[in-house]
Image 1: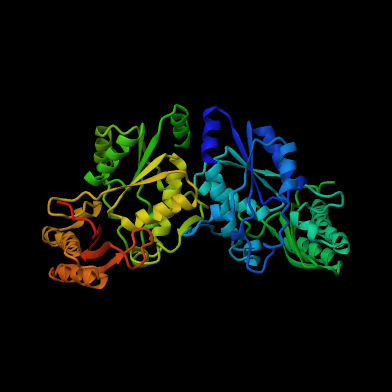
Image 2 (image 1 turned 30 degrees about the vertical axis):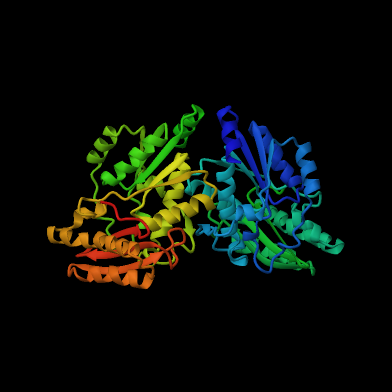
Length: 271
Length: 271
C-alpha cells in the first residue's frame, strides 16, 4: 500500500484514509464523503482486527458482507480499498504492540482489557502502511478518537486526525454495525441511550452543571427501560477521558448487545 | 522533519537515516559512510533518549559533545541533522509506548527493565518523523537490532533496516561511547570481552558445537580478569534472542562501566 501512497504523493495528490472493519453503514459513508471533500485520493481500509476483540466478545459473529461493502465503496468512488488478511497483518512472529497510557485506563479500556492495545496497534500499522495526510474517525467511538489522537501525535506519524459527527437513526440511535444484532423490542429500547444523552444536554442548557446530577439523570432515564442494562455513564474530558468533563459517555447492554454512545452536553443534541 | 523528507522523496531521492545518541565515534561514522553509499540523502539523528535509561543508569553522565559531533557530521557531508530536544520528543501528556514482546524478554531486556520499550518507542518516532528508505544500526547492539527489525516489520513502517558490522579498537574492544568511562587499567582489562568472543569462535571452528561448553569457555576467559565482572554470556538466535543459537552475547562490568559485545561464532573473529 505504501508504494501506491508514495506515487500519489509524488504526483502532489493528498491522501485521506478511512479505517473501517467493514459492515459499512451511513456513518462510515459520512467519513468517506468527508474524506472525499478534503483530499485528492481516498483510501478505505477494511479489516476486522482480531487483536481488539476480547476472548468472550463477538469476533466470530461480527457482521461481514464484502459484496455489499464493495458495492457501496464503488458507488462512493473511493480510489483504493486496503483489505489485508489477518495473516498479512499479523504474520507468525509478529510481537509488537502499541500502548497508549492514561486515556485507555477507564471506561472502554476497563470494560474491554487490551481492546485499545489492539486498536492502537492496528491503527499505527494502517497509518504507516497508507501514510495518509488525514485519517477519519467517527465521534461515536469517542475514547478510540482520544487514543488515536494521542498515538498519532506521540509517534510523530505526521497525519491529521479528523473526527466526524455521529450519524443517527431518525429516533436518535447512533449507527453501529452491531445494531443488526438487536431484536425488534431491543431496537425500541435502545433509543433510550440517545434519549438519555438528549436529556443530559437539555439539563445542562437549563443550568445544571453538577456532573454527579447529570450522570444520575442519564442513569435514571436508562433505568426506565427493563431491556437496557447500564454498564457505565460518566462525564469526562474528551481528550484525556478523565473526570470531570462535559463529554457524557454511555455503555449499555440491550439484551446481549453492547452499545456505546456519547455527546458533549454543552452542545444541543442533534435532531 | 517529515516535510523535508517528503520533498526529497518527491525529487526522487532516497533517504538513509542513522539514529545516534551523539558522542560520535568511528562506529557511528561507519554507519554514516554505509548510508552515504546506499542513499541520495543521509540524515543523522542525535537524541539522548531519557526513556531508554533506567533510574540508576548513566543518563546524567552520558558523554555529550555537540561541537565535536557537529564537526564530524559536517566533514562526513551529511545532508541533515535531526536533533530534537527531550521536550519536543516527549511533550506534556505524551503517553504512547511501543513494546516488542519476546525478543526483549531476556539478557539486556532482563538486566535493564523498560530499556527496550524506550528504544522501540523512540525508534518508531524517528522512523516516522524521517520516513527513510533505510535506517542504519550497529551490530554491537545486537538485541537492539533484533528489536528494531521486529518493530519495523510489525508496524509496516516500510523501512529497510541495515545492520553494519561492529567497529573495534586494534586490540578488539568494540567501540562504544561509554568506553570513555574506563580508567587505564580498566581499559586493558576490557579487552578480555572481545578476547573471549574470539576464543569462542576459534573453539567453534575447531569443532566445538555445544553451547554450554562454548558459554563456559567465555566465562572462564573473563574470570581471568579481576576487574571484569560477567553479567551474562549466552549463545542465542540473533533474530529471536532465544536459546540456543550461534550468536555469542556478553554483558560485563569493568569497574563501574557496563559494556556489551557479541559475535556470531560460526564466523571468524575479525582482525
